[in-house]
Amino acid sequence: MAQPQSGQITVDLAAIASNVEILRRCSQSAAFMAVVKGNAYGHGLLEVSRTVLDAGADWLGTAQLAEAVALRQAGITAPILAWLYLASSNSGAIRSALEHDIDVSVGSLEQLDGVAAIARELGVRAQIHLELDSGLSRGGARADEWEQLVAAAAAAGQAAGPGGIGVRGLWTHLAWADVPAHPGNAAAVAGYERAVEQARAAGLDPQLRHVASSANVLARPEYHFDMVRVGLAMYGLAPADHLDPADFGLRPALSVRAPLVMVKKVPAGTGVSYEHQAITHETRYLGLIPLGYADGIPKGISGRGLVTVAGQRVRVIGKVCMDQFMVDLGPDPRGIRPGEMAELFGDPAGGGASADEWGEAIGSHGDEIINRIAPRLPRTFLNPVASA
Ligand SMILES: *Cc1c(COP(=O)(O)O)cnc(C)c1O
Image 1 (spheres, helix red, strand yellow):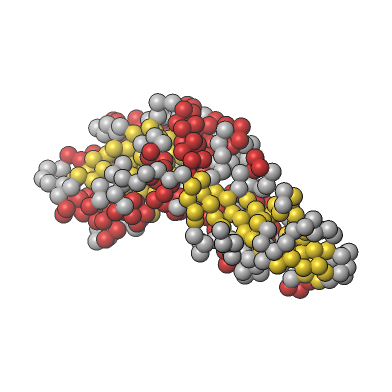
Image 2: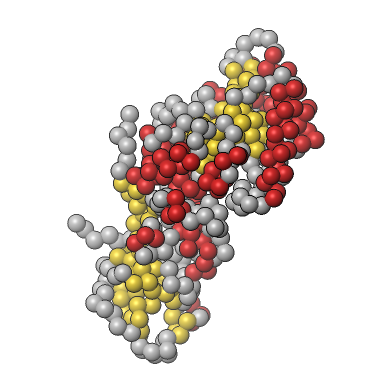
């Protein structure tokens, strides 16, 4: 086989399928929405979506309407919810979503009016999920706007004529979603339950109440309600600081490797990379890795022992450049030659770093690392489901 010239991203879809099966058991009788926003957390929208549906997910969720429409255009017929769009009655994006039978979130009167107008025009019944802002201050209606919103949604649902509104869901996303034990969650969920009662009092009878994302799927069964929305854990990433995916049998699916394109010996006192922020104290061997910040490698990993070469962790040395960075192979090259594959991150069960460890090194989390990594590199998918 030809030696790889550049970075290699591999996504093992079998890991995602197995994670879905584990998480579905954790979510008990609740319906399972697989969150595939952000190009499926950087893993590949269509491949991941087909895999999770095959593994038993009931719903798909995206932020952007365009990603939801792309799923329909690829032939996916499962229910889809999308929750981020500009409310304006002439919005082509809303029209396209409704034409493609995508449920949309509604968190304001403007959004309700925009969606209802387009639904009437198209003669379709738009299925909406009303969103409560329970404290994140992101999307959704605040508690003091909620009664008006549910009343308007109930009225829109009863309007005569072709097209209209059906309220399928009531949902919220928790400000402390990634900190299950935080008391802010209990207060937000209590507010959500009051909002559900208000909606019922207004005459709505939504089938799907949904609140929990990954961390609360694992830690708080009482927040599961009728459906859970799962991202991080499904990709084998840590959903909270104290929840190790491996403790639940969850495995990361995405790994990044790259060949060393050069191995060079440098004497003591050699400055490495721009501004010589690193200087060797003895004779060292340096390995050159053909990935840089243009590929999403964060500059903040300099000096960290995150890369694995020939079974050993090695440190990143000197500043990360646009297309390349160096690792310190030590005073003895151990027979390492150009073409040797370096693992940047993957399944930590093998001793290498996880995306979460990279995230921690720069004060972030694994999902930010994976979303930023190598948008220009192709992904190789292992174990895809047979496409329909
Ligand atoms: C991203 C997101 C999720 C999934 O959260 P994870 O912590 O990745 O499981 C669920 N709901 C909403 C609204 C989201 O934006």
